[in-house]
Image 1: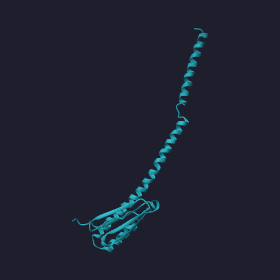
Image 2 (image 1 turned 180 degrees about the vertical axis):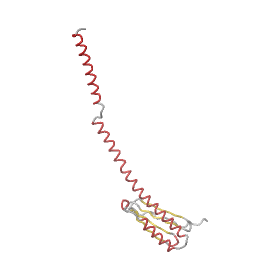
Image 3 (image 1 turned 90 degrees about the vertical axis):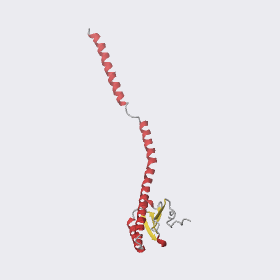
Image 4 (image 1 turned 180 degrees about the horizontal axis):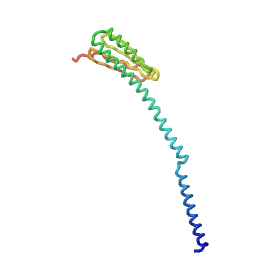
Length: 169
């Protein structure tokens, strides 16, 4: 082989190597995302978060309301248990103490004792729940009936009914 024959073969080999290397580097650069693809993903994530965030925030208000309702139920149950002792004044003071201890940043409790042995209590939303939550309940220790009515609007909840059921004919 002469030197003139090697030169074209060497040139061809070097050119093939250079082409292979440059196309390989070009493929590495082309493996990224385009700006349009990234913008589409950002828009989709924005839409999903705009839909999910209000639902999430609403769930926290519902949880606070549920806590208020649970405390009201516990307060009425304790009043019914205290009433079994027959001391109306003791039940009234116990309910007032429970109402004061249950007050929180989002619940304000009040208690009343009506004649006929039916004890009532109510709770109103405060803070985040102001004007969005009202509940009232009653307990009749004679019949064991307990009732709680809830409203999630500014209107007062419908009145709970713990009157003794009418006797069967």
